[in-house]
Image 1 (spheres, rainbow, N blue to C red):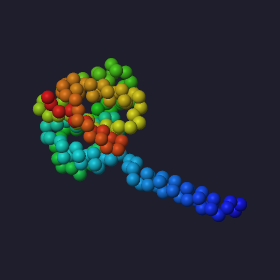
Image 2: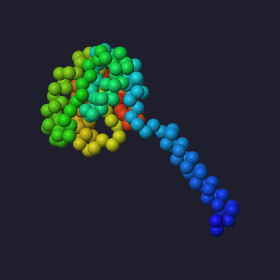
Image 3: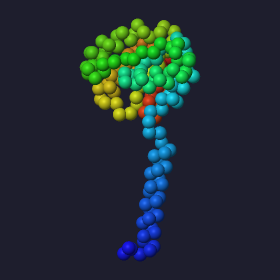
Image 4: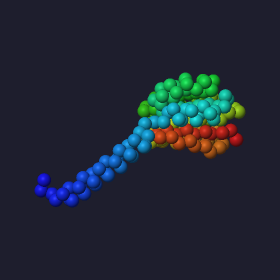
Length: 159
């Protein structure tokens, strides 16, 4: 009440502009994982003899939910890697688990890795690096990357 009319209008105007900008950012930026878009893109690109790897293991539930809506993905072999990833905190243990992966990589197909992009704890980030190195060693090719909000999809083609 003690403020002059013009000062009060100016302060009110600044507050309104600040809140409009905040609301615009909130409603224009996705704030959840873009599973529908990611799985739809994967369904368009995948071939029947490819392998899909889900990492970390807790991502398999949303992936399988959206996979059910895409018939082309039901025919593709999908595995979840490192189910007990919190216990696998050394490179030797992770490499031991990844040895089984070599036999599952198709001879004539590619490998897709679906993973979380942001906020990976250090243990999972290290495991993801080991997983990528192992696949590159077998496939001998760098991945093509598809980025979605909080999700990454990588495609490792056969050389």
